[in-house]
Length: 422
Image (cartoon, rainbow, N blue to C red; front, side):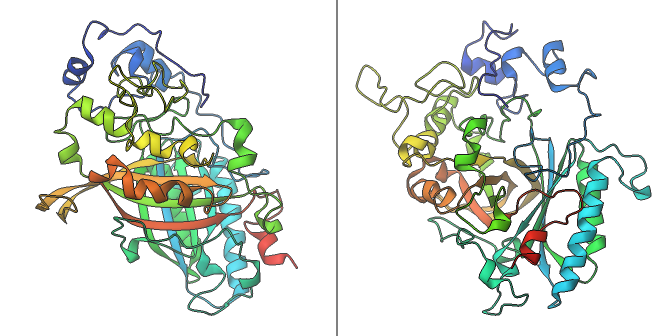
């Protein structure tokens, strides 16, 4: 995704509608394509942008081997299957053998060889991204695999943030595997093969399915209808904010630290609020994605801009202001989130009037990568957890952090430098 992508000049059949009437015309849910400025989903321009007219080239497999793991800066695929594993053995060699089998299988699957059980499924730009949790290095005070001294200082437990309602059974884990592709069956099939190869060495602790409206070239929209990820660092800034360098252990060089948060959104309440109020909460125009201080999505955020009465155009407690680099001493993270929809279940709301009953279990799978969570997610989210207006609609229900090592070279296995370094 380029910061120069902009569809504001495209012809729109809703051009003569006001912003509020536009949302009424599309059902008010904001779940249309990320290129909404080009027209409705059925319009030829949008079909072409999304590859729905057959123009998308699905023959381009994403290489598994390389300096960095795929699935981090890869143009975002439309579906994700995230699985976290607990290690069930004290045998270090058994883990190495499992990682070798995972490496071989991942290289084959991302190249389009999904084995006989896939029944001809295409690779659909499949990527497999692996991470190591704190439990691989020590658990319950025990160094099970002789790796405790190699744990990166940046692989820290996240603090308890204001409003957290984390479920332990859906949080943490010793190893993470995220499959991303443009076909949900491909991601599920890939994880199934990983689980099969794990045998008795590792068992699934939790898993989570995600999806996005994006096409890898435009900023996707979340379930609240807003573009999500506009403030991501640019390509030239990846070494500064995303990729681990010489500051940590050698086996993490060219890798990144992943923070996962499952965020339930009170969509029933959000859907009843006016668009103007939603925009004040987020700090952006819902249709264009532009900051309230600008006109286009990638316009610079002007936190000092005021209206004729001296009020900030971007409210003091808005999501965009609190997440901005300017409010966090320049800190940035790479957001690669997905929406989730797990149906509906019983819930007790965390905000007045504290209603209880069956509500959507849906929201955001916040996945972000950074050079160091202490100077990335933790720094940014600490104030947001206390002050963000968006908190009245969101509840963080699961959390995990993993160290994703550098990429795998042909002939190596995932984590080889960790397990074989002196």
